[in-house]
Amino acid sequence: MVEELVIAVIAAVCACGLYAMAAARVVRQYERGVVFRLGRLQEGIRGPGFTTIVPFVDKLHKVNMQIVTMPVPAQDGITRDNVTVRVDAVIYFKVIDAAEALVRVEDYRFAVSQMAQTSLRSIIGKSDLDDLLSNREKLNQGLELMIDSPAIGWGVQIDRVEIKDVSLPETMKRSMARQAEADRERRARVINADAELQASKKLAEAAKQMSGQPAALQLRLLQTVVAVAAEKNSTLVLPFPVELLRFLERATPAEAVQAVQAVSGAVQATPSLPADQSASDEPAADQSAAATAPAPAVAPEAVPSARPKVSSVPTSASPLDEKPPERQDAQPV
Image (cartoon, rainbow, N blue to C red; front, side, top):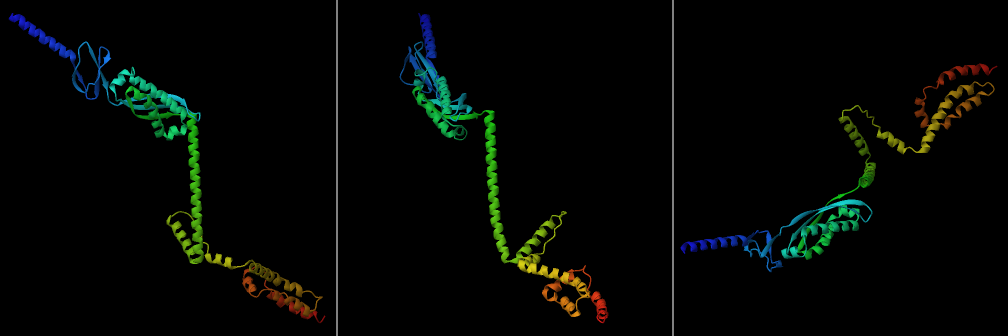
């Protein structure tokens, strides 16, 4: 009897141990347990920790509640402005209701992936190329709303959607490169023109300031000479005297013409005296008057200044000294 009782106790302990092993379950912190009893969903979600079920009757499904990172395959599409692009994205989502994720949809991961691909194609067709390249934040928000609307009924919450890359055809890339280059060249020209305008204004102000102080121009010329000489190169600098410029500025055109005429008259009058006096048909008084007549027409101020410049005209002293004896001999005859 004792042996049979011991055997029965041992058998019962083994059965209890086997039952406990079959009924015991451990749910991790990032998981939730959903129990189906004979195929029927049981109320209440098993939290993290140790839990038990009825062996061979209950079935426990563990659902991961972590945020899932799922890449969306690249999708080919045509934008609203008829440009063929290839866009890929990444989606972040998590399960907020474990029972709904198991009951409402067969495979919530596959369902979210397919919804993300169709939504990405739809958002490509509704957007322009410039929006895909520069205004991605707005497109990400629109794509998130499109995927999140049906996913709420599956017990899934879309956390974030990001467009990763937009692939363009090679022809479009070259066109965009030419457009960007032309735009940069246009901005460079505008900047250069603006700089020239500002420089011209500053130079005009400097010229106006120097016109009131003539010595400033001479000082500026000396500064330029010093700057060129400091480089120790083979450049030859010939400063132009500022005083000559001032003289030319003060001289009027009428005065310049009068001075030129005076010089030319003096040059022509000096050699013509011997030819007028050598004529034997005219009286001596008329010859002397004719010789002295052109002299008053010459400006007194201009003749002295012009005489030193005429170096090739023969002197009139020797002909005058030699011809008067011939006139004296010709008169008695």
